[in-house]
Image (cartoon, rainbow, N blue to C red; front, side, top):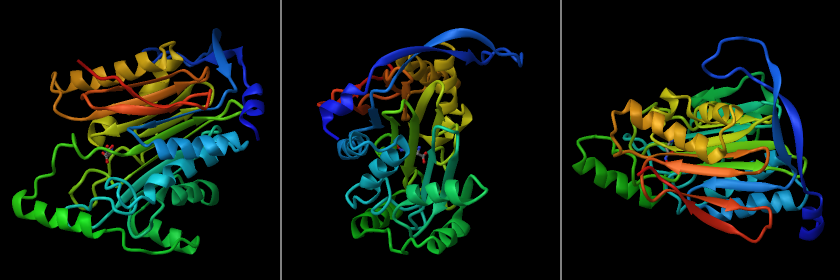
Length: 327
Ligand code: SD4
């Protein structure tokens, strides 16, 4: 589809939605008191500087594809990049030298799938999608996930590149087996897309914290922590120290804050500030959130300087880094 026609389909509209009770209220009743702006202008955002991934997702949407295909194909660009040492092939191993991958995916109908600590398979996001579509479960972990992937036709391969292996061997000599605080080793990709039908999907994929303990799983494959999509409200995803994101059910929190009326930017800032507050003002760790609402507005915020997110905005011309962090 030509870009011009594609964009012509777009336009902002306003609909009334059922507002859920606020986080502080336990009352079950819903009332119709919120008008939410919606758009059918496709928009893509992703964590960090993964411009190839956001461009791929945009390409899928521009061709008339849906958000689910866009997020899956977008993040697979990074999973397949051997030079990216924090996702898929080429990812840094755990402290025993094994590359273990975490990923999850979620669609507009709250269908979701995840794989945890998956080894020997290059595209965990595609396996997560199969878990979502072909099993009665949401998460498969470890050997079970690998066995399922092989049954589904995924090829086994060695994910540990020579570069990551050499770095790990060096780390073993000097580290006393301490896991580094995750400031520099950041590059988990979380990608959110809004498609031409006004529907959301999200994907999040990572090799996790470098040199983690064997069996450690972070936030990235946990629905609600590393990723959350609510097609009535918006979507959010996280990057950084997974333990902190799990503790606050971060991405779910961001979406709920948007439900209460905060913009994506305000919601991400509030989420990060809550984590900083729980850590008594400590800021020597990395936590970043990005989010998008039904109007196609986006936001992103991080504890630490250096964080950017990529936005492929509806004009289709921009794939710009946006930087915003706690100060
Ligand atoms: C994890 N959240 O496993 C991931 C790591 C990450 O940027 O996002 N790094 O905790």
